[in-house]
Amino acid sequence: MDDFERLRGRLFGIAYRMMGTAADAEEIVQEAWLRWQDVDQDTVKDPDAYLAKIVTNLSIKQLTSARVRRETYVGEWLPEPVLTGGRFEELGPLDVVEERDSVSMALLVVLERLGPAERAAYVLREAFAYSYGEVAELIGTSEANARQLVSRASKRVAAEPRRERRVDRAEWRRLVERFIAAAQQGELAELEALLAEDVVSRADGGGKVFAARNALTGRERVARYLVGALQKYGEGLEVRFGEANGQPTFLAVSPRGVEAVCFVDFGDDGITDLRFVMNPDKLAFAAAQLSRIEGLPDRSW
Image (cartoon, rainbow, N blue to C red; front, side, top):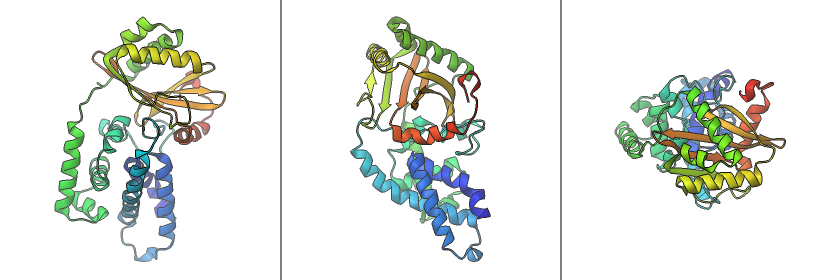
């Protein structure tokens, strides 16, 4: 029990980065716990490696079936957000840029394009700094093949164009507050001025709530969609600022609970990417995290 609880955060972190969903990660960690109970633990020399291997292989197996499910997913598929920073420790320490990048929405979307073994090798090596020999042991392959898997995955990740630039969090909040105010007040000119010409907006409603089924591109189209959606569905929404997946974010909250977790990326010419996670199933984990906190000064956590 002590070994498992000590490692729970790392195990959840591996599974989450592999699956892109907190719900799947929790199921995998629970299954790992059940398997751990059936093992003569006195015979396990390295509980850390043993449990990491169980979680890695469960993730690879489950990811294969998850990819089939996502092919029939209604609308845009986005990873499930996890609140981070301060009192939220589910994804482990995110003190440096590399650690935050390892759980960013942008990277998790890219990782969806990798094969399960490539994704596992990349996550173990780049996010958790396992040696190539350890990666090979954890996924059950040779060290040479582990190096090839990491290399291929790293090249595919690096080949993805990076649209966003790093923005100071105070500046990010100032710009996002302007963005929200313009959208709420229907000020199309002000809103378009904040958007890059090639801005892309993606909303994941899973077919369960109102959300655009396809990505929207272009400042005029995105601006008109946002204003129209808020006019029709935005009554009673409040905004709470904080952090999710290692990056600043804001939540849209109503008396019913969390309605959306929203990610905003900035480039040199304004907002480049908007990602709205609105599927109620994907908001349950973040809502449960939020419910543990009492008092949100300045609507932040």
